[in-house]
Length: 350
Image (cartoon, rainbow, N blue to C red; front, side, top):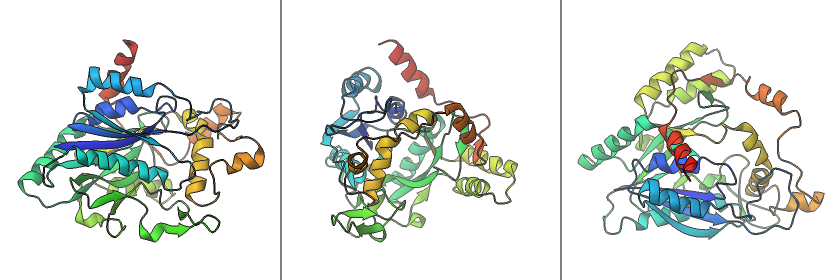
């Protein structure tokens, strides 16, 4: 048995590819657990065009209908109210989703696997069989407690990956056990001098990664199994940093790893202006997380309004700059995930 888990908050309003995400992971998961968050009402002005997360976007009804008509009843949800002033909120929502996922196993005595993914992360079609192969192998000869997958940041379109920006190696598959949790690792912990809240060292940890529950340390990646060749990420990042790595070598390394390994597409930056419009929310969330401000609304209270969306006035010029950065690598022959067409047709028929 394989149970996936994720967290969401107003995914329809945020323009996330959340239905595509669920359709892709439903190919390997018997159940998918979702921590679905609502957001408290903030009586503040925010920039025009930005998402107001406290306004209901109809996603719950869409999820239910999509589950009934496409996924076959695989979704289970737990409700949660997001606390914008709690620095570790992101990790908390993932842990609530994991707790709900583990409940689906009932009396399996540690057998079975959980898979964590974000609501904008899509499993490639060709990797479905690779996930099953890994699980079957471990059921025959158990040697691993967890495995890692590679995440590629699709940037501007589905044929480009931006390195030195948003590509990760993450533990994604874990055995059905409560030994794992989502929290901040011990080395990343600090406290806000004004509130005493545990916060993260700047850009070091968001509380969403996997830890050993009893020690709050990250598992050693060498004791898990890589389902891909991490050299592809290393080569791409070296290229983005201006090191003397020929582009053809980078592309060959990536292509070889894509042909043989298991990769996740991170889709959030395919639509760059959409991501920019969410800037006011994520900037304030990360600022609280890193202890730079004590409350989510601190910037607005000082300025009287939220004014920052990261979407520039000269949009075409800024987009051209982003799409000309040296870390962009084209993936030749990349197959557009079939779930995009599945969801497109389903929405069209509604």
